[in-house]
Image 1: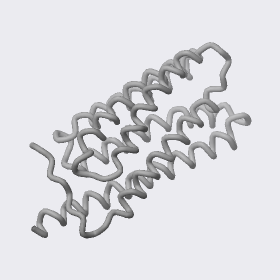
Image 2: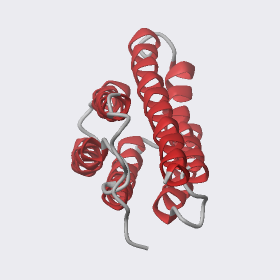
Image 3: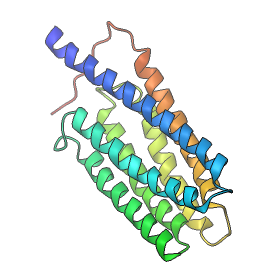
Image 4: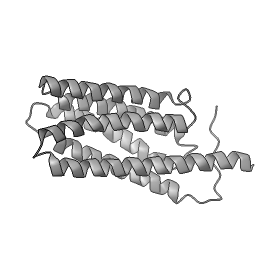
Length: 192
């Protein structure tokens, strides 16, 4: 029996650590955005590229540590989409195209739905997934808002800062739920 529980506790510890790191990254990103966005176009551009690039890396690490890349197709797809978005944002900024909010909007919808799918798949085996489900659904809704805001003169970094803050709170909540899991609780086995 301990052989079954021990790997689950390791996985829970990994998810908790990942969620706390993701929350910290997002809070730091928001702080940097407010501190530098108005003063430096280069810093703003870097922040816009780093955000989806970090998401790609975080999804890849999550997939690898939670059963491998083949067992986590939603995270792997999210990794590829986030990588493509980082490249698209870079191209958009280099070429001077003003479609960054549309790119982020499409990404928020796609990555939010993939995060929702991942959380639904994990809900029986991992705690804190209700917050990840809410985060994914809210991300998809925010994506529609970003697309609607394109061309309205809305400051991109300020708009994305609100999005990043809400995401950070959801990651923090999920990490705390895992942290305060009672040691004698056993994971519910998931089918397959």
